[in-house]
Image (cartoon, rainbow, N blue to C red; front, side, top):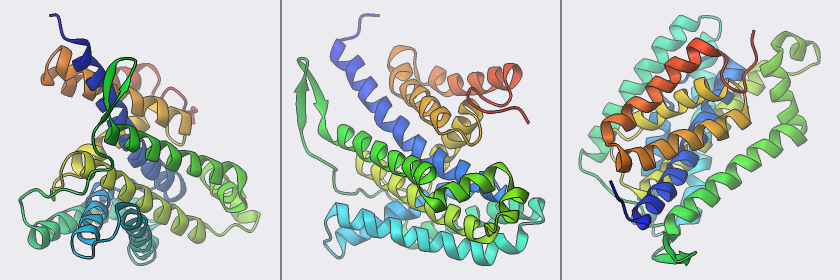
Length: 289
């Protein structure tokens, strides 16, 4: 099969953009799980609602895309605080009930989105228009902007966790909750911050995806699955692992359909997860318990 170089190049660019969107999802999921020990199955719906907030802010209120995205992140962070305080905090000692609650929340938010937004697809304004030339090949500007925005947000989270007092407190809570409490770190405050940051990152990821592709009430499930797959491959709580696994999954989604067909693109990550769970259950960069 002799494919034009431009098609392969387009697949790589699309894969990198998808990979970084998946990374934003995975970072939020791993942050929430690391602090709260709850797998937030409704995280995909937060991603979806954040994208719809941007759509209405740009379509109805004519706000610039950058301002609408920032507001959406703030709004979804506020929603995360509400969820943590009134839904997850009362269930923090009952993980089975928390799983049931997140599953029910997924169905509620998805059904509500269908009722409010309808089933037909919508679109967010493009991040950038037109292509530019790189080494004689055409690169869509919107894909490049998506990668840059996702990288900046990921680096901001990394710097926050490594260099600030609250970030280091969150890391301490994730690594040793009892020891963090003895140091005067409030687990409830850390859980609230984790939910707020995770929801804000999900809103940003949804906005990038909605601008590159389209919005629908069911757009949250695929990136949620990808985010969970990234956690398995890269290792729970590992930022380098999330970056590496996100790029792998993104390139699989971008290149494998072109080279081998969509069936192999769907099977590839599943086979990889099975292999890693068999050989190294903690993931590439995770630590054995």
